[in-house]
Every structure is written in C-alpha cells, then in structure tokens.
View 1 (cartoon, rainbow, N blue to C red):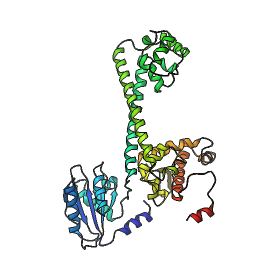
View 2: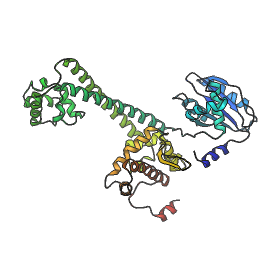
View 3: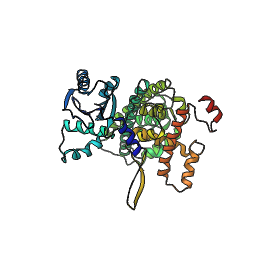
View 4: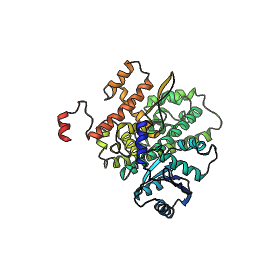
Length: 417
C-alpha cells in the first residue's frame, strides 16, 4: 500500500462518517459501528438471512449521527459467507469494502495487548482498520460476468480433478503394464485409453494377433493404432515385468479411472461450450481474444469482472497478485518479488498464457527476447511478460480496439475521442 493510495482511502472517511465493521460467520454475523473520533457502538449480532440483513440496515440507520451521514461498511472476506451480505448491502446503496484477514490477525494485539479474540473485538478491529484507510475495494461481477466467474471456477476444478485421474492412470499402467508407454507415448490420450480398456495387461495384449486386435479396437470407432504398432505392443508384452498378483483389482481400478476420465472430458467440454456461449455476449471478448485464447479471456473476464471497471492496469496487476514489493532497511536492499496476494486462478492463467508468447512470431516475443538478452533469468522474464500482457490487454480494452502489430493512428484516436 503506497502513501498516496492510503491517503486517498483515508480521504473517503470524514469526521462524521459512520464506519461499520462486520465479523462474518456462517450462521450469525456481528457488526460494530464507530464514528472517527466519536462514539463506538456496542456489538450487534444478526442472523445470516434476509431478516437479519434488514435488521442490520435498521440498526445502521438508527446509529447514524444525522440522516445525511455517509456510511461505509467493512467486511472480512471469510470463505463465501460474506458474498451475499456484500451484494445485499451494495444493492441498498451502502459503500462496501473489504478488510484483509491478515490485517485483522496482526491488529489483534495492537488493540489491547492481548491475543484474545471475540466476534465483537474482531468487528471493532475491522471498523477501526476501515477508519484508518486500511481497506480494499472490490469489483462485484454482474450479469454474464458473474456467470463466467462461476463457470471458469467449475472448469478449473474439473481440470484439476482430471489431472488427479491422470496420475492414477499412470500409476495403474506402471503396475499392470509398465512397457505400455514405450509403444504409446501419451497414455492419457483418448485413443490410447481405448487401447488400455481393451488390453490393460500383457496377457490381454497377447491373447489376439495384431490384426484381430485392430479389428476389436475398430468396433468402438476409428482408431489410429495400426497393426505394426500393435505388433510392437505384443513384443513389449512378451518381456513385461508387470504385476502378476492382484491384477483383477488393478484392472477394476484402471477401468474405473478410465470411466472417470471419459466423464470428466465430457463435462469439461460442456462447461467450455457454455463459457464460449456466454463470451459472445461480452463486448470485451473480441478485444481480449485478439491476443489470448477464449478460455484465457473467460478467466480474465470472470475473475476481474471486466477490465473497464479498473482505473489503471496497476489495479489489475494487484488483483492478480503480480504487483511487486521489496524489503529494504538501512543499507540492505532486497530483491523485488511479486506479492502473490491476489486471485490465484487469474495469476496462473496469465502465466500459462504468456508461455505461448515465448515463441517467435507471437506479439510479446520481442519483449521476452529483449529481457533474456539483457541477462534476466527466465522466471523473471516470464513474470515481466505477465505484467506486459496485462498492460497490453488493459490498453486495448480502454481504447476499444483489437490488437494489431501496427501502432494505432494518433489522428484516428483523436477523432474517436
């Protein structure tokens, strides 16, 4: 947090502003109010329901010094329990901000020189931190962008689950038929999985001649594995050192893994189809997809709520946890690192996206090559490339144009403005 940003946030808090801190929980929340330099309210507990939210609004209105008093509500983003409350308060016209749980944790001892905690104490700490300007704004996705956030999160969970199943598949193959990958390099491919389903063990691979194996595989649809390749599989099966005991259980586990992978592939495709359908309804999509892929664009839109809602590219970098920090004191000056305090899915997606730009012919490759020429380590160059990508995407969305290798005509830009 820079001095300028801290002063800007403190300037929002006037001497008569009513600051509300809310300690969020699953069933019951606790709120506490304060007026900077004035009265500190008693804890107010209310249930996590519409009736509780209405009671909170009534309590806030009752504790306002004057009817025209501005109100700012601070929430600690605990799990998912704060989201509905934040949305409801925003719809009622209240300014809602976030307070980092790390801030609250470190401020506990500052309040009363004790590590003790309670809901009332935490609510007061949250209100006090907001009054000091130590809070974070947040962008709440709405409409299609809210749907995109949920869908990209679902797709990420499915992809992560599929990766876990890939690991189980490799484990089963290494036990049953360790020579199999010497013939079929990628055991996770859909065609290779069909071969595994038919011939999961060396004994199964040796039970039929290669041409008969080819015919059996073709019953399930077109197959790329030729007779010569299947003959090599039989040669490998003859010299196999695969397990000889417990193979029935291993085969059952292998078939279960293959079924799960087929199901996950289908579910991922369905989610991606829905994501692509929603992307057509977002005006920023053509701009972003002129530089990155559709799934990357979906993650950026879902995680940020749209780049147009941010005042500068630095705010997007901070949301992604790509903002830099440095530890220095006296004569010591440490290296700069990224904070990693933002949204991890957004940061991971940007990192994977820039890997494509490390190849010649890609838009950001010249910048990456220049970083390497100057002696920057590859990890540093990749992080710099992530920041460059964010700035590029933000500038394109700000200007309302798709990427072009040629710089924009300044005269056209002036006329458009």
